[in-house]
Length: 244
Image 1 (tube, helix red, strand yellow):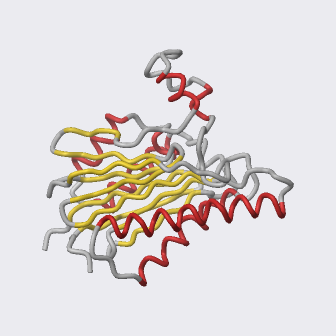
Image 2: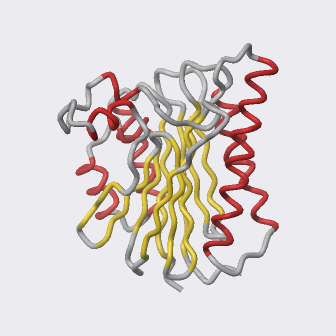
Image 3: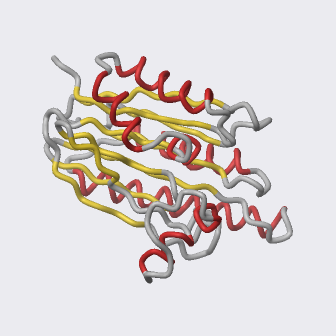
């Protein structure tokens, strides 16, 4: 059994401009696992892809883990199996059209944490008054930025919307991982780009920092994006330490 006392609070909304919600999330507080996925807009069955990714991780509930590394290994296997299933689905039923999704998984076990992700859904961490983006978007814009071909802080650049990695996009899916230390007062935000594209990092930080009720904070973040006429589905999960 996990030795953590962390709890996740999540909410998702279709948004005012979409007819279907292709986002999905799960909060497995008992395991110490929280996940958000965003089906690839414009592709067939994006909702199926994102829900397959998150619901497949539900199987971890039935397992017992003695370490963070053991949980992470189980997550990797499940996520890569989902990638294989999506590629096979595309090949068999959709004439090779991509059926894909982003995914970001946060794992916390004791004083250690790990994030595993692919795509442009994000993980942020608040520590004290510092609010930082932990993950790196797998987008064409980030590739151009790393090569010095574009400048930072160009949110309207079209390359932001072109993914370079996603589940279901290729037979070989390269997951990215980071190990994190965990402090008792850390707060994590996991979200899809439907939120991060609409709300500045500063405003995200303000809502989380000043909200005692994290359920209310999640609702406020979603409503802020909707108030700006969000062009995409919007999903947010806040993970905070529970006071015994």
